[in-house]
Image 1 (cartoon, helix red, strand yellow):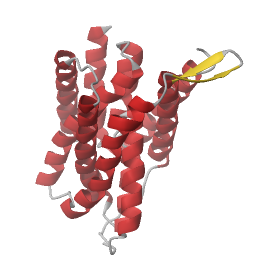
Image 2: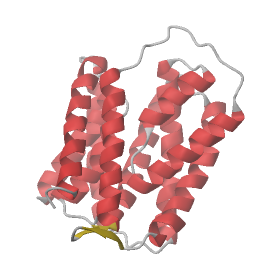
Image 3: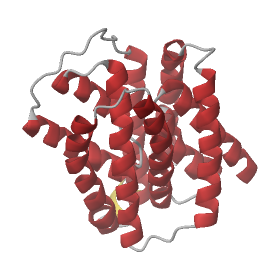
Length: 264
């Protein structure tokens, strides 16, 4: 199963490199259901993996001039504060046993996975629906209050489930700031990298036990997959595959929701 987990890490990285986002949402299911890692620890590991792979993607986008650094840093500040607070304070404070319904004990681990499944369903909807590309950039005056609010929301979601949240960030950058889609994607990678790695520091600060040997190996495999995915974009149109991947994520989200509740 460990070998399968590493193979799936390559698949996850490949998907992320090919589609430019969304692939990282597979990290937690791989860690939890294939490698049998505790859901809380899996979200911590996911933050490190997502943050590290996003650094690689952001570097590539930056070299292509597809990153708006000013907007990215403004968005990242409230987001990284929210994700650090969530990992350092909120997640450890959640009781292990929440409530009971008809003999079914709703635990902290189940709550995290159910919330993660809901995030997967929202991400799937975003990928299936797709977004229209803008040929030109129409920068708008920065709506600071809205950007701060969006950053806080995305940071909290990332902190709870360990996903990058690109499906929330990219539309915000397009609608609130007026960035072209390609620039919004590149800028979102900067935001995701910063807040994910800062969130992981929150886990270190809260005393989470990290298996560094496993985490670095898993991240290395995902990085290999990402480079393969980036190379594959020369031959495959990512937009064609994104909708199909969205349906796969939708099925995964429904599976996790059922497994953690009805099939428990």
